[in-house]
Image (cartoon, rainbow, N blue to C red):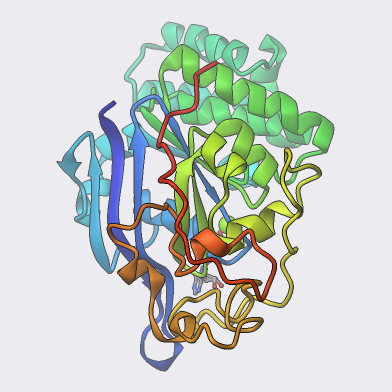
Length: 343
Ligand code: ADP
Ligand code: MG
């Protein structure tokens, strides 16, 4: 399948001089046409920064961004009306994208008239179709954002994004502020819309369970880096990176596998990331528990992982499931890289 969106070695910095922070450091992502890439990791690892970089809210320091194979690295190319129409973003807080003084109908009509150039009569009809598409009643047309529940407001924000007929939608923690009972309905809606409208998605969440439900492939991030990137089923069946395994310890069940050591300790200061492997200060199989593993402090596994059979940026990915202190010399067979079967 052709890539809808491709990020190659993208680096994003905030600030300059001594206070500079590299929030995203050499990240590559491939969003297939009609597919979903999930981005997961603890708060502060750079997920939203990737989203903001794609929609040109922050500049890219290095690396390339392409849409349908066409280079869009130059920020001016991502600030065109054309790009904004093709790539939409939905945030955790729908208030950020909904004007509190305009009814949902007014908002949709404005977009339909100005961007899709529909005539007034068509606008109303199309607004009603969009509301129906996201599961809102026709009466929502005349309501203001504050007159909706959290879930309804998020549906309105989704309708707003879909109004311009995008090809790719980036969802950043869209269900994180909602009641658990509402989250599932929104996730189902997103999946339904994707297959109906053949949309490509980037789905961002700190919550592994929702990312698992939504994504064909998952990129696990730690301190600005992708540490593991693989098909969703493969990731959950055979997590290779100790960080991925630690994140999974927070999930209720892990099919047939030993429970890994849950994650302890705070995220290091992103302004001064640890040397070598950035996870080494917290890693359950790293030098903290295995002092002889100095390679984790000395060498960046991302830079040395090229050509290895696994999908994890880890010097000891093959040993990740063994108890701290155990040393495993053999490498496992390469994991098959298949796409999750569509539903
Ligand atoms: P996530 O979405 O994974 O929680 P973010 O992309 O929001 O992470 O943040 C990544 C890092 O960049 C964090 O260390 C955060 O504090 C920092 N950061 C985010 N936005 C800004 C900003 N506007 N200025 C400076 N630093 C920022
Ligand atoms: Mg975020």
